[in-house]
Amino acid sequence: WLDDAEMLASIDEVIALLKRQSRTLEGEIGSMINDDSLWACLSDTFRSIKGVADRAVAWIMADLPEIGTYSNKAIAKLVGVSPIANDSGKRRGKRPVRGGRAGVRSILFLVAAIAARYDKSLADFRARLVAAGKEKMVIRIALARKLLVRLNAKARDARAQYANAT
Image (cartoon, rainbow, N blue to C red):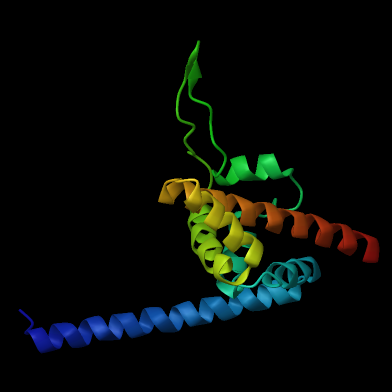
């Protein structure tokens, strides 16, 4: 058996290798985005929102290539931040969010929380929800949906400008 020092050294080597590979992949993804003129245009457009960084842009573009081509309702449902009716007869149940693309949804949760610190309209929206007594998860979902709708609108405009320019 390995002693603790050897085991820790081995684990540190594996972590260092994974970090190097991660940086390499990030560089390759960044160059792929920059090499494609539409992707570069979309990347610049997304990063114009304060709080949206390169990793979030890469994740969104990889997992949600349809952004900017669908309506806001359709893209929200595709990502899984749209409430789904749970009604039957006269009964009206809670409208949970479910399904969709979990990777994009989790990135949107993180980015929306960061963007709400810098964007006054998102911060005001969050404050209104808190004042209304909404649950934390409901607030997270609402912020993520609002951010997604903004990203979708920006992507739609960028795609239209790109199509007109070429």
